[in-house]
Image (cartoon, rainbow over all chains, first blue to last red; front, side, top):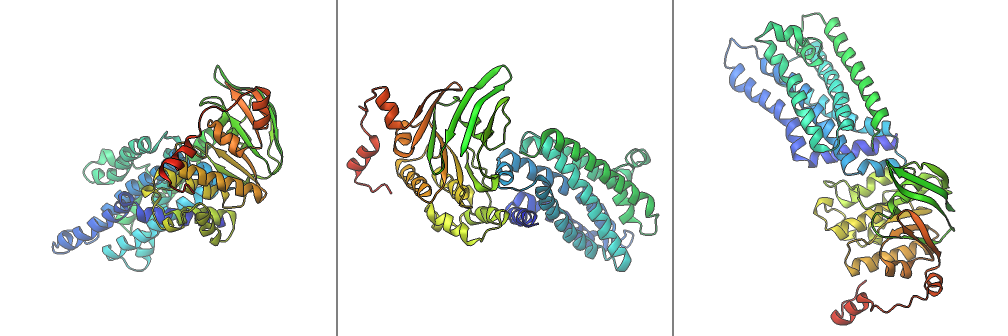
Length: 230
Length: 232
């Protein structure tokens, strides 16, 4: 437990000192807030929560994925992980520490998004839970990319386009039924569906997200067995 | 305490270690000497279980948590401060964070405690890496080229620290290609050439055996004489 706490604390401090990462966590809630206040609220024909749900899906797809991949790739490239493991830390403790920060940050971001969107009660809780589940999926996918990448640059080169595809697909699906049908198996589409319409069926999209998490966890385990952390 | 017996290691077609055998006694400073590419780092990697040997046996006589490690790549977290870097490891070892400050003091970095690692000079980073290696008061300390690329002042400071650690009971295994450093520090050395041990024993014994007389002036002493700068 103390190793997980140590990595959690390290990751948290590192995140606050890493402007590039910090901006990624702040930019989507900030843009959603600005668009909601400047565009949506004065315009009666646009739902107040439209930009929040749109940017929340993009956040779930892009930010957590690229940050997790970058963090792990950087710690491997700089050989920091090697020293942590030599000090007696287990790889799963490292993953729990890094993943824990991503989930905690996502929880905070989800609360900000939820407040901006004006959600209340059960809808607010549902919004936060769905966004955190999406972040778990992104975190696992990012961790896999971080492990298979040779260095931080290679991790960014893989994570960014993948994040863009996953994050922006819900936006494209608003204009194309084909995209919607094709990409409905991805968690970001389901996150978008769940947070856009609270009266819609919860079970099927939630199951798809859980299946995504399970598949990414299996992918991560496979990559870890093949390449290890250090 | 540390021992390697008949270790062989190949990377593809290339044999990097061949029949390497040696023993290190407790509380000894043991030097592994050889030029770059001789196989010194591979030996440390095998001893610390970061790499597996193709054949042969090895042991270090203590658990990994009782070892300290300083490698050519420092692995420090560049955006965090010196103290934060050490505190992470203090937390993992389950020792008081006060030890982090003590370790920083012992390498002369107490004034840089809050400085980000990314802002440190190479010499300061090397001292910080050493502070991390000694943080848990290791029984066995592995130092891979501990003074490589450092100025004489810093190198001498690190030498003093290494000798102090031995006094406190640590067994030290170091690699170097600096012969003067080996003579100054090591109780015993092995000379490694292309993965094969060509000689081993106490430095003075080896020199005597080979009738090697030191004729090159000690540049470090010249530096002190010329500049009058105290190098500690």
